[in-house]
Amino acid sequence: MKQRESGLPFDDFRNLARTLPVANEEAARHTGEQLEVLCALGSKVGTLCEWYSRWSGRSPVVHRPLMTLFGGTHALTNELDQGTNVEWLLANVGEIAEGSSVVNRLCHQQDMGLKLFDLALQIPVENIAQEPALDEKSCAGTIAFGMEAIAGGSDLLAVCAIEDHLNVSNASILSVLNGVSIKPDCSQSDIASDELEEAVAKAVEQAASHKSNPLEVLRRLGGRETAAICGAILAARTEHIPAVVGGFTGLAALTVLKALNEDAVSHCVLASSFADPVLNQAVQALGVPVILDASFSSHFGADVAIAVGMLKSAFKHFPVADQATRS
Image (cartoon, rainbow, N blue to C red; front, side, top):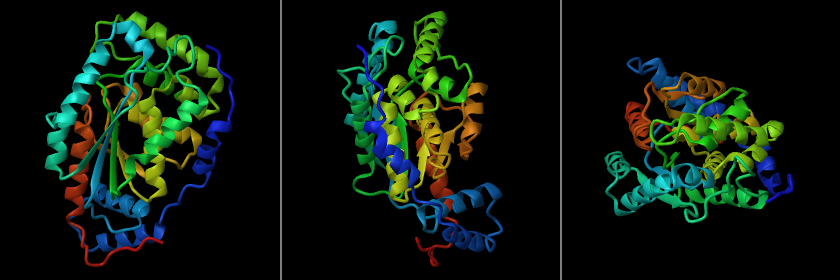
């Protein structure tokens, strides 16, 4: 299936990325002045307090954190593992819906809301080793759908995908946009490493010439979950909501947005680092703070929930009587 390249479906998002709200330096300065009184706060805590005020326009106090989880399926993954990952994904979606997942318990402990978005799981995106994952209209529509994640309000967005390893899609996006070779993780599946690396090579080949057009790279290589996370992050910025992003898909989404606009992810922190040093180089290229200096790849969402808990605990030391004001 051949698909015409056109920027038109993405124009709204390109325009949005060019006109994102800027940092509220007055709020950050106000918080910094308050922090000078609190000598007990360490430099990292102080930096995070100022980061929150800079992008929320308020003193660093979190009352309504929200976890958003996105799940999507991929034709290439289905072909490589004969549907094993889809079965795993559906099982986890069921557990979350029932309230019995690890992420449910962690969100409960942090008094954090939880939204689950399963994105047309019965219709996987196309095989990216052969053709683009989505057409422009579908990819743009999924970004817009992801922007609805913040409906209902929140003062801290936590976002990640339902995933258990670095898949071909994310490895390909990160390889193209970072100009390095990133290998997918074969430790969580029965797929041979050479099959995965060959799939990444083919996917990268069909998108490499579009490196200067990150939304085109997204629609050619990304899953619906990646596009939706991009939308959620953009929506958070427009509503002055700082964001905690986690996982491999979160890293890929941040990389797309960073390539779209150098400042588009400044309101974000990454929940944790990665075991793979090449991935951590990609993190460094983003220039966003990392909350946890450890890899939590064993269970999606765990690092994000813990990072939110650490932020809430740090912010409790801040004097809330004198609130910063959003301009």
